[in-house]
Length: 233
Image (tube, rainbow, N blue to C red; front, side, top):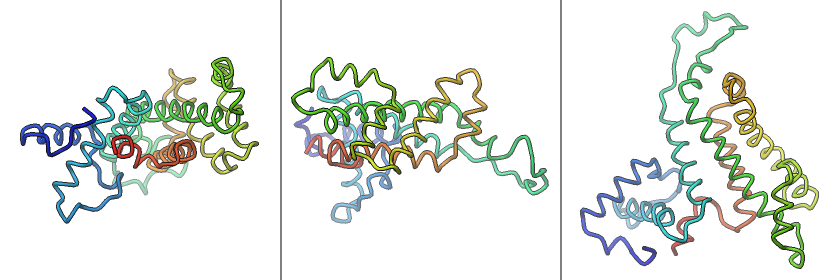
């Protein structure tokens, strides 16, 4: 599959791939921040489709690739959910027990929970790999050391990355925010109200993506938006 390019496909296959990527919510030029190729929007669209799709169905795709694919998809679902606008909001008391914003977040509850659960898992994965790469000396990297790093709490891994200068205080704070939202879901599974009151949309969505991107860039030297295209280059 890695050797296939857009020119190898029939018109029907091209339509299939494009439709699939659009359906999955990944066909988003704003995410890729790219321009058209030779002013041909159809050509850039097909290239985007392949750059997203190939790593996912390739034998070389990792669990992180699949998580990233799902994260972008959940983001699109959250952003596409209608926002409830209440025309008489100014009549609500200042200490209202419920607000239009809270009601809108409730509509997005399932997607938000999956998004931040995924984001938390990805932060964990990247943090473990960063500790192994940047904190543990090459001569001591082993399965047993990796196991110990994995068994540490996420807060401990963040501290190790911070005190060794791998990440800044600001990045550590952002990681805490993203992972804290994940913890609200995991540890308060019977009380969705806590999470919904805490999460801020779209601010926390943007912060989560930026945090994952920062860790990914630190680990691999590339931003998330280039991950798939670099893998199949």
